[in-house]
Amino acid sequence: MRIYLVEPDAQGRISGGYLYNQRLAAAGAAISVVSTTLGSLAASLGALELESADWLLLDSLFLEPAAFAAFADVRRTTGCRLGLVLHAFPSFVERADRGDKDGLIDPRPTGSELALVAQLDAVVCPGPYAPRLLRQSGLETPTLVCSPGQMSFGTMPAARSTVLPLRVLTVGNVTRGKGYQDALDALAGCADLEWRWQILGSLAWDPELVAALGRHALAAGIRERIEFLGQRSPQATARYYVESDVFLLASLTENHPLVLLEARAYGLPVVGYRVGGVPDIVAGGGLLASPFDQGELSALLRQVLSDAAERTRLRSIALGAAAEATNWSESATGLCQRLRALGART
Image (cartoon, rainbow, N blue to C red; front, side):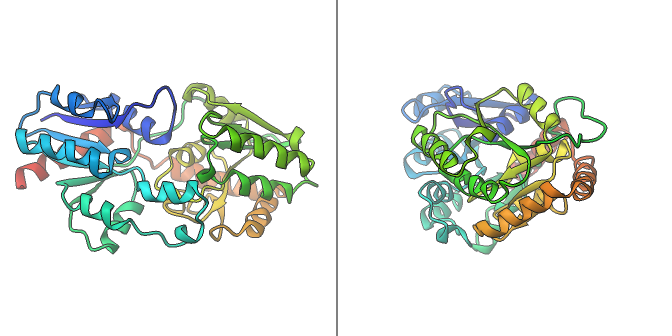
């Protein structure tokens, strides 16, 4: 049995979904990643030598009717199994990118998304949030949780420094859905404290947003305390985790974000919104505000920045949770075993 995980060409951009796909494939000899474009999708799928026992997994970025039709055609002609790696519902991302906070308080997949998922032989999810949503929607498609493996990349300091200014870190491409405006406003509410904010993520997705954030920070009097560092490799990013004191993520929607697993692995207290699968990861290792309550977000950030004992407490909880994580080889092996068993039953 082979597993082919098909994703849109990332064109050099880094995201949690792409990193998950790559690391899972690197850890599993039976798993291959196929990167393609929508225009080349049919040709890329046609080039695969699929057998009836094999699994074809589409990345959730392909969860739309035109792309799905190409996958369904291949299943009909080869007899292979068809599944989905569900990193995010596209409709959730669209709502976040247009700032539809009301539509993200208690989000549900669209009817079109649910109709496509209902046609699958399995859904693979990095965490428990998406399976909960699918169950609430009444779908009976088999759903498997394939947890990410260990997320640290190097050594960690024995203890955090108390040298000021404290270092606040956010890792994520600068898009509207990642809530950078809310994060900036929360930090502006803590302007009397000593901190610096470092942002690691592509600045190319929405240059207008990057410029607007810079103008807003200048008007708030905190521009010189913010660094837009652009996209860095995972290994280079590790240094920033090691040197930071707090992780800030004000995303409007998240499924099972790898950056929070990384923050946890490095013992960083997390401050963010209680949305999607964020509470599943953060648990007691951070402070989460009610969705889109900027005042509460700022108050929680102030609490963490101003209380060294609280940071130490949260760090201990985060590291304890990270120590229980599986490794990527176990995740890949478990996925292969479960898909093989599922294929044998259907």
